[in-house]
Image (cartoon, rainbow, N blue to C red; front, side, top):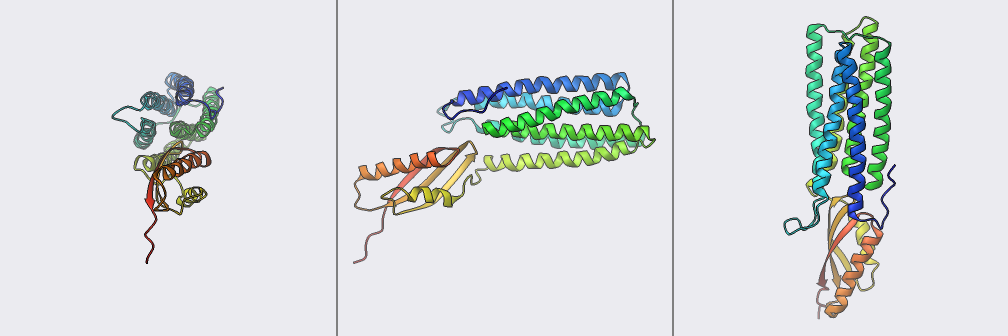
Length: 300
């Protein structure tokens, strides 16, 4: 198991940790998918085959994630002075679009099953395969979600939500298998429609978080930053505070008002102290730009 990133670890360590996690999760997802597909094809169980195809989509998002991490790990360059970490966020947004596409496929396939009156071939091993593979997915989801929070990785958290959708699909398959044994194969499609709704909601949750980062929504409360800045001696006022970025890569710019007769060197020292204090006091802040303004002239 990979432990949480320490404060003194480098950005390279962060990306290596995320890559390693995604690689092992990719292997688990495709092992689950192969088990479902193989058994579904052998027993002519259409719902199991569909679930296997869905599990392969988990692996596809892992591949996208690895590609996103590879790009995000590139260092700052002339054309990317703020780095490449938003590529990871963009990869997470791609996961959301895949979920929307998956929901459409599930609805379409369910309608086709209703029209053709298909019923899954159910036996004891059908339940064994689906329960075991669902257990693997639950482990993957919990592990990936915890690591995503510990590392501050949008991609791992988004992929954990995607894996949760796979668990919901597997639950739907169990309901479908039970209903088929009881003589109600139509419940297979009804459960699929409900599952598709959950998948769409998951996609919207991911899209809402990632688009906020990509569209530079405010990342921190203004009051918190102003309070920290005002604690530095020599700062008369702090205003025009703006924040943006990911939770682990927040950029801040603000304006400080100091005594208009203050020497430039002293004002610069105050700017440095404010920058350092904000980075220490506020988790996730990686860059602070301070604009110094002189206090208004006194009225005679």
